[in-house]
Structures are given as structure tokens and as C-alpha cells.
Length: 156
Image 1 (cartoon, rainbow, N blue to C red):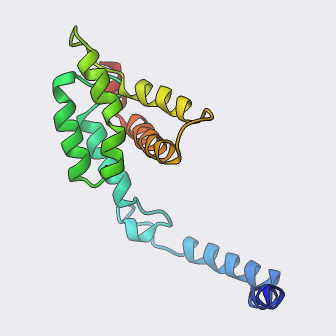
Image 2 (image 1 turned 120 degrees about the vertical axis):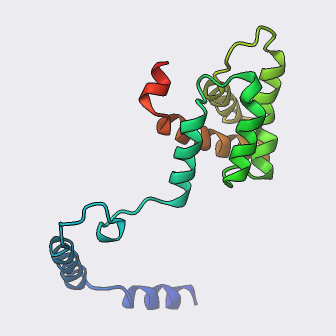
């Protein structure tokens, strides 16, 4: 039965000639697009995802490498508002909340480093699957936020 399913799958795959003609057609289509309006995203092959726009908006407002303790609540609310943080993410965000409470001198927190350290610890044996998943999702989000932070904001 498995062999029949595999055979059926392989028979329905395009041949190499079909793939080459499709690639040639795609190149011709891309070359034939009008170049007079370069700001129109529908003309290009790449469109920006909604998530990337949301991450950029949050990164423009908050710097995860210098997050002020009094900004933490607004930061969390903005992540939830834009749909970048779910219930599991909120639980994982408790790592930064705990570090914020331990910060007695009110210095800005490097939340990215806190999440990086938690991610490294979660990769070690003994961490539960749910903990690994929560920290991994938060690590990905904070890495995206860090890379989307404007350069002038990082310099200040």
C-alpha cells in the first residue's frame, strides 16, 4: 500500500523538461513586468508578510537590547496587540519579567541576551518539550525584533 502511494506520487511529479519550461516561463514573466512603477508590491516576486510588518513596527518602537523596565508592560501589550505573542509566548516572557523585577537599579534590560541564555539552557538535556517550544518561539521573535531594529535606534 505504501509502495502504491509512493509510485502514484512520483508519477504525478513534473518531469525535468516541465520544470525547466516552467522556470523559463517564470523568468520571461518577471522580465516582462513594467518597470515604471517600482513601488507597487504586486509587480515583484517578493511581497512583505504581515508578520514582518508587525515585527518592524514593534522594533521601531522598542529596542529589545535596551528595554527600559517601565516600558515592559507596553512592550508586552504591543506584542499581543499585533498578534506576535500568544499564550505560550506570554508564559515564556516571564523570563524577562523576572529579570526586570531583579533589576534594582532600573537600568535598561538586554532582553535579547536574556532570551538567548534561556534558549541555550533549553537546548540542554532535561528541559521539557513545552519549555523548549516556548523559549524557541520567543527566541525567534526576539531575533526578528533585534534584526528589524533601526540602526540609529541601536546606536543611541
